[in-house]
Amino acid sequence: MGIQNFPAALQPIIQQGFLEREFETALKSRLGYRMIADREEFAVGIGETLTKTRAGLKPSVTTPLAAASNTNLDNGLVSSNWGVEQYTIALNFYAATQDLNMVTSRVGIASQFLQNAATNGEQAARSLDELARNALFAPYFGGNTRVATTLTSAGPVVEVDDIRGFQNVFVNGVQVPVSAGAPLSVTVGGDLYTLVGVVADATNASTAPGGVSGQLTFSANVTIADGTAGNPVQAATASAIVRPASRLTTAALQATDMLTMSSLLDAVALLRRNAVPTVEGVYNCYLDPVSARQLFSDADFKQLFQGATSANAVFQQGMVSDFLGLRFITTTEAYVQAHPSISGLNVRRPIVCGQGALIEGDFAGMAADDVAPKDSLVQVIDGVAMVTREPIDRLQQIIAQSWYWIGGFCAPSDTTTTPTTVPTATNANYKRAVMLEHVG
Image (cartoon, rainbow, N blue to C red):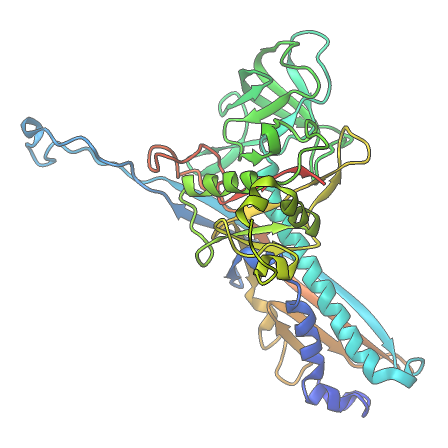
């Protein structure tokens, strides 16, 4: 399809690239969670999912080889292999469209044509940013929840607010459902139990963003003291969530629990303990404007900048810039949730990310010649296809302006990085980001 089928008033706009620039400007002007993703091309002809394998490390050797065992063909050595783990990206199709009636919009047709492109670009950017956010946060919510209903008597089944992170366990680098043959160690209240089964509720009552309420079944009875509503429930492989005053659950946050510099330093320390690589020298911290503002009320923050003048970039911008080993990126897409137990308060969730915290798979077939031939009005911009369709209705009046994206996001695990290979590492399955929770 060439531009000759479009009205004469629109042809110069298309020829001079105005339409593409409007879409691209709107698409790229929104910095957010998608920026942390490592982009990978999803090749055609391999199905709807892509499974990749990561190689792990081998333990350090600190014991000298005994001279007496240095014999035979093996020299007293026993072969050891490095571990592997897998992550999967699934393709999904996302799209939206907008119609432009050339007759009813005759007065301002050119400007509305460009405005539609800009609006579509902004919509695409926001949509992909939210998809990236959801994929990034989901595994770091996992394995951290609380008892939803107090047990009436000691028993093996506990109702919890969110079962994410408890449903699967890694076996030889592959996720398998939790069962008696593949159990998971979980701390309920103050004691350790063995999880052998998970069932989601028929009606979801979770208060966590994207959460799934359900029941956890253990191999032994949980005491009433441990199974009391509000008690923390944490998997042995859960990622750490940094909260002020070492609060154990989201519901335990109080009105005074604001974001502090100490919490951010704790998050940086966790990433460094797990040897997570930085993003161009620092870690990315995604937070909303309220979280950024709260830092200016923190005593440690004020002491750090005591004596600084208005020439300091932090005060010139009215927000925080790069310091503490962090690059601060404010976003309006951050999770803001009503406090689950205190009316009138909100829970905010900054997240600190290192390199490789998120993977984006873009389907290579979107730009294929048989899909987007050179004389068509299908442009692929930053992985998103912008489509402009000529009027094909009976009156030749309605132009369709659309966008679509085929791809997916996933947060890869790091189960092979353990204290055996990196002595300071944690046992969390997902190590490349640290979520913080505070009230604001």
